[in-house]
Image 1 (cartoon, rainbow, N blue to C red):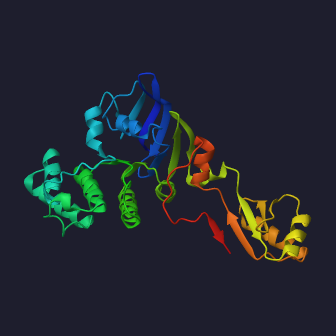
Image 2 (image 1 turned 90 degrees about the horizontal axis):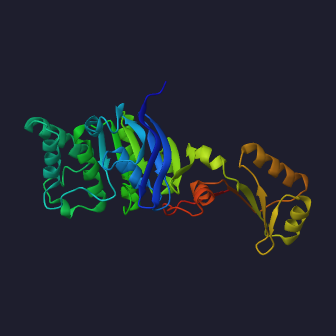
Image 3 (image 1 turned 90 degrees about the vertical axis):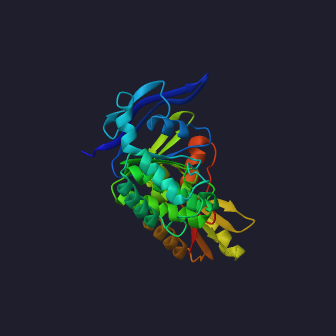
Length: 320
């Protein structure tokens, strides 16, 4: 049986008459990336704060790295690392000094602290900047330093609360690579993000949080399969060919202005072949065929009534 790094049952949290978490359950296997997604204000950060012992839940139970969240809070803290939305880096001191400070906080010996600091600065490509004040670092460098500081204590579980917000695409992809390497090394990552492609790219499992409840959970592909709306779009330049195709096929949505037909489809190879065979059988040739399969954006519209942030320049349709 797979060991769980995080197991939570019926977690509840309210602020006054505002219910933020309404009895959520979470199960995160060791050595995986689990992503908690939801609109702003859905309770993602509150969940991270509870699971990392920063605040108490109003109800429910949780075990983190095998330890009871309430009764063994100190043992939980020793097993985890947390990188929040806002950097914990002290800009007045150098990157190396930030790392050594964390080593002191983890009660490492001076020699061990310097060894760990040197290793992590090299691993996160910060050696050249190590002696410079952290205030001079770019956003991506500060984020890398932030995570490097989190790793000083060799945590088994890392909570990353929107770690790439505000980063440029290159820095974001660098962060994705760091997260993959952490998991390859056996670390469990609990990720909240406002970027859909980030969860799609990284997460082994995704839970969608909405109105304090888990609206859906599964792999990215499982979530996408729950949402209708996949289709094949045929576009024509010849009006006669368009009319022939439209009259021969009943289950289509017409767009007479651009001479396009939309056919419901899951996008499988078999369905595509069937459509192409049908076009051949009626002697009609489409000038353009595009396949649209539901993505996480569609999942969010369906589950939360609103979209989430998308990484720029990520097309949803594949033309052929």
